[in-house]
Image (cartoon, rainbow, N blue to C red; front, side):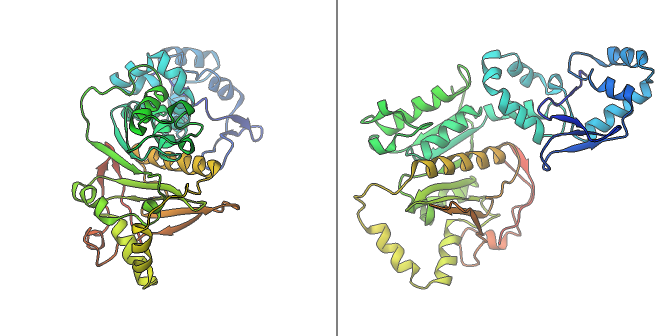
Length: 375
């Protein structure tokens, strides 16, 4: 064990004998009482010393081994200690890949903050490399999501889309200007490879099962009012899927659908029909009408939606249930006031979520997820 205080958390003395780790309320922790000798010992927890050397240094400060053990236990319980060497052999291989780790140090620092156990951040980073995510759409939103997921260490990111890239598909963090006229799927694959942290991070060494599908089509209507039949195979196979897109200057993120546990696209459509009997009539017209106009997809809004969707996707892949689980988030220009709407299971939907009693504890994305209730 080579314990180190998590360097991502800034330290400050709240008084003569209390130390605060972290700035923001979400992750800040206070430790006390801390005397001068213990405060000096904290400076030695930098990951370069094993326990025998730490005991020796503690004796020089008139601190007993028992005092050191109690302190380390308290720091570990508070989620303040890290030890990358304890993350396991596979993570240890990743830790030695300097070309990858140099790119992902900010991501690893973030994971160390949200994962309390020593080595937890590095284990999650290694787990991402074995995951496979499919992004359906290579427009301003979808391509940027794929780029972020690949850059964040997801090892297998594939993008599905048809046609050729148009000038209005180009976006910072998405398809580059040179891709105009090229097949969208080919351009997106190149973007994913270029975004990957280090050589080989996006190369396949097999075909892992899908951890997540991100539905981000260029036509935002397919996100705002997704076709239930399209999601039928995903529901049947138990594949989690997340919707994200922009329609008429309105950004949409969610819901993240956990088949059998949360409301799906079919539930959404049925709930809307319950509230507005004319909704099915209008929806049929919108879906059947020809779209010749360039979509109203502001670049800043598209980037915000892509960033939020990618962050929610990564949280899910890392084993959490983000705020978009069974919930849709919307924000419209110009004020960009994000609002949420729960998408509960509908009793008449064939997905079965209404009678399933919730998602339960099951494995999604290779990591156990906790119970979730929607509606």
